[in-house]
Length: 86
Image 1 (cartoon, rainbow, N blue to C red):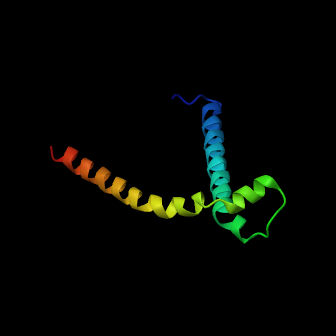
Image 2: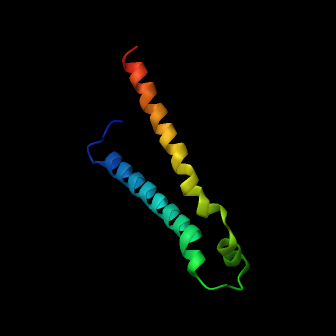
Image 3: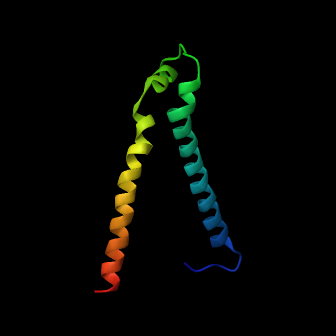
């Protein structure tokens, strides 16, 4: 990508970067609320909040994903070693 004289491309790239950081932060906060904070709140009459509070899927998502992540990182490292020494 060629940066123009006025820096328009640079400001656009910065805007997209902040947008992605914001979306990632909102997703992380939503996961935190769903997995942990909603379990500490008192029971609610609101149907959606009660469903989120009683859900058990997201509580086990991260602990069960970590072993898969370790295996994926190991295979990535192994494939890079084999590619480098081939």
